[in-house]
Every structure is written in C-alpha cells, then in structure tokens.
Length: 247
Length: 350
Figure (cartoon, rainbow over the protein chains, first blue to last red):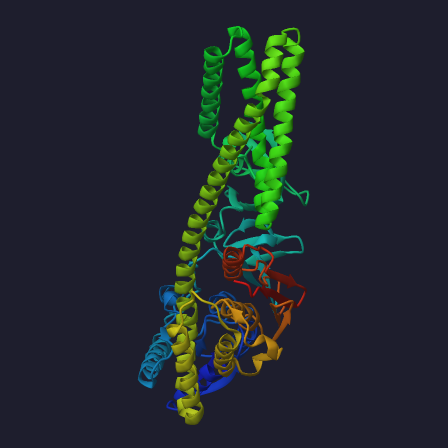
C-alpha cells in the first residue's frame, strides 16, 4: 500500500529529521513540506494525504487550529517539544505524539502504528478519524474559520456575538458572519467569560458590544447592540448580564 | 511629603499631649515665681504655647523640603538658622503683640513680659531644636522603613527573576527544540551538530554560573545573547536575522544581568514564531551622558491577532528597573504597524 505524507513544521532541521527517518519506508511518499499553518491547511485539503506530521507551535495557525479547518481528515502524528499538549492531542484523535527530540525507533513505531491502522481501515472501511472536538487548555483568543477556500483568523475581541444554527454556529463580526461546525457549548466554555456571556439558548454575546438592555415583555429582555441589532435575552441570561454590566 | 502627624494620628495625640503638659508646667511655674493673677498666667501660657504648637506643626513642611533637596550640610545649617530666626520672630513677635493687645493696661505684666523675652527666646531655641530632632528622627525612621521594605521587595524580585531567568533560558521549549535540531544535524552535518552542542553548552554554562545580583559588563551579556541568537538561527534559518551596532565605548559599561535576554526572547516569540517571512532583529547600543542606550528593533508580521500587549516579560523588566534605579522611564516600547522597538536606558551610577 502506497501512502502519501505531508510535513507541516516551521523549523528546517525538524523537517530534515522527519525526511531522513522517512527514507526507511519505501511505501511512504513525501508529497510536500510546509512551514506554516495556513499553507498546511491548503496542502492537506488539496493533496488529501494519508499521514500528516504536524508541529503545534507554528506561525499564523497552530497545529490544533489546522485540524479544525480540514475538509479531509488524515492520520495525524504530532511532533512537538511541548509535552503539555499530549492529552489534548489524543483528544483530537492524533494517532501519536512525538516529543522532540525523538529517536528513529520511536518514529518508526509511530509510523508503523499508522500504517497498521490505515490498512485495517482500508479493509474494514471503518471510519476512525472523526471530526475533532478540542478542549483548549487556555481560553480562546482567536477563532480560525474557513470561508470557501479562504481562511480567516478572527480575534476574540472582534466577535460581536455567536448564534446557534443547528450543528453550526454563526460568528458575527463587524465585517462579516462566519459559519463554523462546532457546538455552542464549546464556545460558552472556552471563550473568556469576562467578556462573553451566554444570554440565550441561541446567543453568546460579547458584552463590550452591548449598548443597552430593553424591556420586552414579561420576564423577557432584549439586548441592544452597538451595530443596532437586537438579541433576545433569557431570564437566566438577564441575571448574568446584570451582574456583568453592574446594572 | 505627607505630614507624619496627619498620616499617623497617634503621633498627633502625643504631640498635643506634650504641648498641653508644657503649657501646664509653664502656667505652674509662672504662678510659683511671679506675682501675676492666675488668669494672666494662664493667658500667657496659652498664647505662647499655642503659637508654638501651631508653628511646630507647620515646621515640618520646610524641613521636609530641605531633606528632599539633598543640599550640602552648610546649606542645611544656614536654612535651619534662618528658619529658627524666622519662626522665633513670628512666635515672640506674635505672642508679645497679642498679649500687649489683650493686657496692655496691666503695666506690671507688660514689664515682666518684656523682661522675660530673652529667656523665652532661649526656651524657643530649645523647643525648636527638639522639634527638628524629632522630625529628623521620624524622617530617618520612615526612610529606613521604606528602604527595608523596598530592599525586601527587590530581593524577592531578584529571586523571582533568577528563577524565571533559569526557566526562561533553559526554557524546555527552547532546549528541546534545540536538541531536536542537533539531532537532525548529527544525521546530515555532524560538524555543525558539534558546533551547536558547544554553543549550547557555553550558553548553559553562562546562565548557570551567573548570579544576577551584580551588574555584568555589557560585553559578557552581549556575547551570551549572540550565542543564544546563533542557536536560534540554526533552528529558524533565514527566517531569523540579526544585526548589532555597538559603540565600542559601551562594551565595558555595566548592565543588570538578564535584562536583555527576555527582550530577545520576546522578539523571537512575537516576531519569528508568528511569522512566515524573515524577521530582522536590529540592536543599536550607544552611550549618552554616561548612560547606556539600547535599542532593539524587530519587524513582525501583521495579522489580526498580532500581539496586542507588550507581555509579562517586559512588565517584569520595567518593574526591576524601577526598583533598581527608582525610575519608571527606563524602558520604552514603540510599536508601529510592522515594527516593534524596545528602548532601554541603563544608568551607570548604581
């Protein structure tokens, strides 16, 4: 079985070592090497590789953000000097996690494991690479979204509100709205809750964009936003908002 | 420059009590040795002592002014003499005229008052000296307290800085990535790998052997920073470029240890880590009026999430400089659209 591999890694020597170790495997063909997250996402979606060697700390998009933006889900082996990301890496279904510097034996073990899984997948047609659900270790300070072929990185402070839309959320900013396949709960938990409040089943709002609260009808309020939009506020949401805005 | 009696109410009570005591003693003495009415003696005591009570309170302000001016001893002496003459004039003149106004028709008393002025002047000098002494002691005590607390704070900060320094220099991220680079080089370019191991060893040795309590010659610090940058250069290749313009006069000036290192880490973290294009770190060091002037400029790639704050590293350095030199203006950052500059002034008179 011939496998296609990609390396996404911003340091040259680190790419070199993977290339060097990969010569052990005649059936793995290295298609491309990328040095940042943006071009990494593009290359994966374009080449649909079987295996990706992915660094975590990289310019523009980090390794986890890369995974969020993929249309195609390859087998991922993380390579990083950060051991604190190991748990998170397995949560996103990384097949292995190589701590730099790693030996050739360790590397081969990881690749062999991937080959084995890929072969069983081919025969059984089972779908093992599910869409990742990541719980970041720290609060989100940006969200990477894909709009067509373009990738946008939205700073958290630019988000006006997030609206639930079925399996998706719609992220509203001054410039545009962006769709992202993630549950509301994820953003409720991971955006910093000093600024972001779940005011309703369908809305998480950035309180810096709230102009006013308006009485609507019994027990119900509307949040008037700086961009003139109005959002429904639930009773519970109103309670939290009053606390945050010190009303 | 807060009056100690205002900031510390207890001192004010003691001050009041002492003056009431003095006034009572004054009154008793007059009653024992002079033939005036007790009422006149009381008035005498109240007028003289109350005026000095107020004067003594106010005296603190010119005194604390002398202290902050840090003038020469002879000047301080002259200042005190003139202050003494001035306040003596107000005291005796004020009290004499006031009593003259109130009891002008009692010629016996006025005579006594006139004759006793010399004696009162002597006691005034005595009061004044005591006040000065007390104020000096209070001042000395409060500066001592301040010194002790700022020294303790400095020690704590140094300890923390030392720890952070070790952590930052031998930052696992830096160390393991470097080791990974070396591991790659051993396969392809063994000679270069060896060179890198030696650089890393020198770097680690420098970091471990240094204590941060005394300023180091700039040349030592720079040498180590170049080592650090060369190691990072092997990792990042053409993405990291650096350039040094150092006035040779600056090399034997002194600089607190670890002040520079975090600035380069910062430049690499915000510049190189987050960029896909080459980043230049340009360092210019000069001497201006005996101070070291250090400018570190790096360009960075502008993205919507480019760093917004200067970061905790810079804040720590600022805090340290503030404590070491009592100056908050030594570290400045200038951020433009694609360039970040740190401007550092290191005084040499520590």
